[in-house]
Amino acid sequence: MVSMNLPSNPIGIFDSGVGGLSVLRSVRAFLPDESILYFGDQARVPYGSRSLAEIQIFSEQITRFLLSQGAKLIMVACNTASAAALKFLRAKFSDVPFVGMEPAVKPAAEITRTGKVGVLATPATFQGALYASVVERFASGVELFQDTCPGLVAQIEKGDLTSSATRAILLKALTPMLKKNIDTVVLGCTHYPFVIPLIQEIVGAEVRVIDPAPAVARQAARLLEMRGLKSPVGAAVSLRFFTTADSSALRRALPLLLGEDGEATQIPAEALR
Image (cartoon, rainbow, N blue to C red; front, side, top):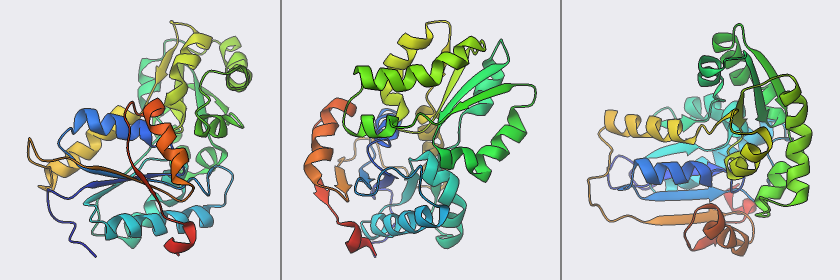
């Protein structure tokens, strides 16, 4: 395994599919001198309906792969995997720094004026102990309205961000919430920031939509600083993409979702076992 204790080593980011690109986008903005390895488990997406045990196995496999490529820090850029596997990963790889996703209920509770907040996330995220803990700690006195947006992850994986089908999924989720007078929407899935323009169009300018990616990128920056692992300013930067599915699908998604091209390498899921 490549040594992971070097500032010049890359950050490893993984998600069930392309959703984690929303986190990668923020990491690029906050940490422009860092090289990045991105892994999308597109052959097994979505994770939201899978068992906790399955998600833990997949997350361990991908973590081992990223570490074998020299990752110095692992970002679990998937709310479902964070809810199901982050604690498990930290116990399994105790010397590896991890950053995970946490539903942004705390900032929503702090800024809501009506005391009514909508949360969009996968079933596994809502059922996880992490979400329950966040709600218990930070959402006292706030009414939360939840929806799992069935089918939305699949639409975003296809790059379908604006169609009538995607709009219909969001309308079904958000219309009842708007009737309850929500003034804030929390995005509890890393895929969902890619449809923020459509969500904002539906909820209107008075409703705040919270993308958790910038806060997660800042946490990664703090951890790297604390461990002396920040890449030096002006370092040569590389960006490598991996997927368990046909690499052409991920390659096609990059200009649309990330705003830049990139080469992607297929790593079959069987090769991770």
